[in-house]
Length: 345
Image 1: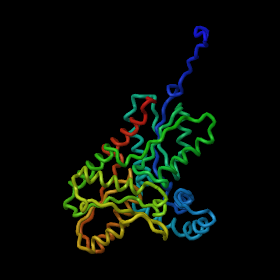
Image 2: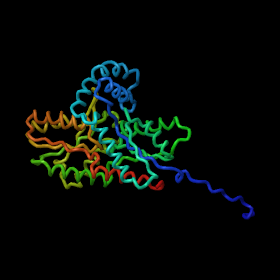
Image 3: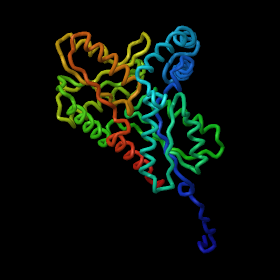
Image 4: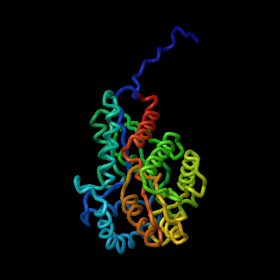
């Protein structure tokens, strides 16, 4: 073949260098207000997710639209009222999520190629609305950042599902990447260790034990292959190793079970009760599975678990704040984002 007569390939502009990059931080969700109807709407969306409740609609919906959505919204609203940000009239999770996005945006304020936004899997701001805002800002690529350190189909997977549902309705959809779970990332373990050490130093007592309490999932989900339990236990192991603690000083437990089926064990509430009855007088609880404080940490742990421990003979109890939008927390988010932007920026 005469190579001198071969056609010359045309240079095509790469989409990877054409527009701006959107970074979307995403967390679980929150009711828009303390009104029972608003809480009911939020719970309906959350508990209708087949990733969260793995029952057929035929089996689950009569229960959901019967007893659950009839009785649970009022109780849940009362629990939110205990921890509500009255100044901004919103949940702490919404306040913290906004602050995380604002702080991340400030690190890129001199780079107009990057636009930072935030969204919730359930409720508002919705993922589909964030996609639209980013595209309206000229983003043809989106880095999706589900702020769940440990992967579960009930959290990370369903957040990604929702992102792609939004993209399915867009003809010229952006290219997307999703940040992988970061349960074992050194920057995350280091941040947890620094935060925990600093918070324990502020206490006027020394805990005999520290519980790493993670949100639970039904045991059958884990038995079917969900890696969440293994991720949680590895986080605790690495944190224990980083702190130089023994297995009797830092243990893993699981909280927030719902319904009658077995969930991951040991259960946080029963462990707290058992420790108190066995004579342990001082404990602290940290929540490494939550990137931001929310009803499960502020009301369930700092409220309910505290009460259980003190009622059963415990004397001193401390809840360790999540990483939130602290310097340590933002160091984790920024490191993950900068790494995943590689090749785009």
